[in-house]
Amino acid sequence: MFSFKILKRSKLSRARLGVISTPHGEIETPAFIPVATRATVRTLESREVRDAGSRMLICNTYHLHMMPGEQIVQKAGGIHGFMQWDAPLMTDSGGFQVFSLGFGSDHGMGKILKEEPERTIVQGTQPSSVKITDDGVHFRSPVDGSPLFLGPKESVRIQEKLGADIIFAFDECPSPLADEAYMRTSLERTHRWETTCLNVRKRSDQAMYGIVQGGTFPHLRIESANIIGALPFEGFGVGGEFGYDKRSLRRMLGIVNDVLPESKPRHVLGVGHPEDFSYIAEGGGDTFDCIAPTHYARRGVVFTSTGRLEIKKRRYLTDQKPLDHACACDVCKTYSRSYICHLMRAHELTGMKLTSYHNIHFFNARAALIRHRIANDEL
Image 1 (cartoon, rainbow, N blue to C red):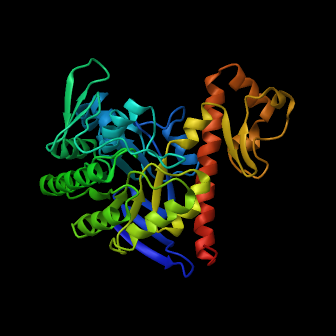
Image 2 (image 1 turned 30 degrees about the horizontal axis):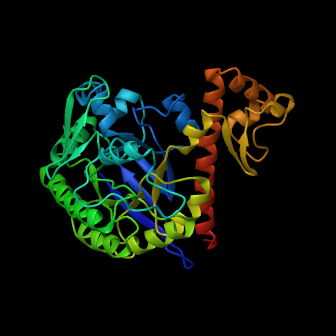
């Protein structure tokens, strides 16, 4: 069954060491969670992701519903058997797709911006490709254009068939361009949806996390944390935007986590570059997911102890050093920058595989360092 145990609380910040226990094993926290959107961490086999240090993954309900469909996954023994992953799994509810296929697509942007935006999305505004109603969200299938509806009941039904250890309540991830009036309406809708998710759940072997929204409006974040924190979720997610610099990320997480029940785990949704790890931990986050390691790897960007390395650049063709001299991963033990540069410049899939493996290992090693610093009263 699911449980969370706090092993140590920091005296310097809100950081804590913990262990999440699930039917498929345990994970030490704080921990980085790689994204396996369609039941795969791109370019890597499940065993390779495990070898790179990962102990939990997060898959996506919307995308697995579209392809291959939750019935096929269920018949394969659930998501664990389907992808041959013998460790804990999460599934995102599909709430992020409300944004990414809606306002995100309309404005060509992600949920995190580098500067304060002009808030042009006002109450009553609808995205062009998605219709958001009080009951749920109407999409068009990217496969064949057919109409698709996803609401709280549908999201839970799909996630129960997928069979992850931790599932998320259905929410609307609002755009950072939304003004306060839109954000409040969205927040109230999300709270109703999440209550419905609790009411319709049937599986007792899955933990359900509620999601706190509210954008960069502190009073809305506090309101959401109070409402969602009072509901009988096994853990909590913190979603949406967090501000325009790293300190605002830590501050916003702290505001939320000071309200949420301390005894339950908190997952930070869609945030997790290496430079974010300490801010997330200091703000009280226990787990966090991000597409960055593989997204950047496929484009030739390698994370190292001395900064990011653009391995496609010609100067690395004659460089016989490993990607990172301080890294203990199998890629750095085996291959040179020269070889990986050649593979990436030749558009060989093996190059993407090697850079992805290294980046996943690097992110997991950085999370382990965060745990070490907490244990030694350094964070």
